[in-house]
Image 1 (tube, rainbow, N blue to C red):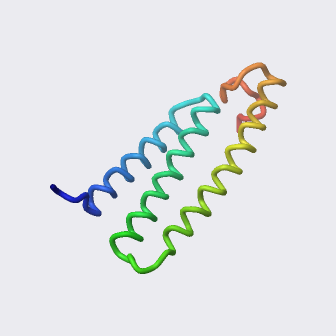
Image 2: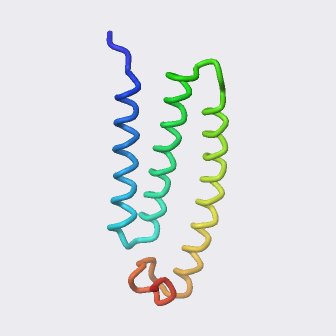
Image 3: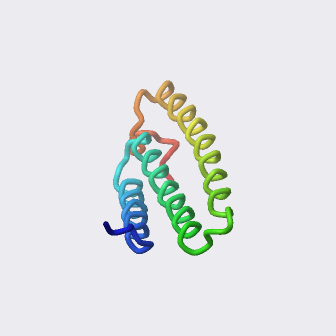
Length: 104
C-alpha cells in the first residue's frame, strides 16, 4: 500500500487555495466569499500540518500555528456573519454589487 507523500498533500493544498481564490474573486454573494476565505485558511492549515509531519516530525510548531489559525478563523467567521446579517437587514440583499457601501 502506498503512503501519501508530501507532494500529494501539497497538490491538494494548492488546489484548495486556488479554488478559494477563484471563488473569492468571481462570486458576489458575501456568504460564498466567506466560504472561499475559509477554504484558503484551510489550505494553509494543510500546509502547516504537512510540513510539520514530513519535515519537522519532532517539533509541534505546525500544530500550534494550525490551532491558532483555526481560532482566528472561527472569530473571523462569527464577525463576518454578524456583518452580513446587519447588511441584509439594512439593504435586503447580500450581493456585493447591489450594496452601495461595498463599492469603491
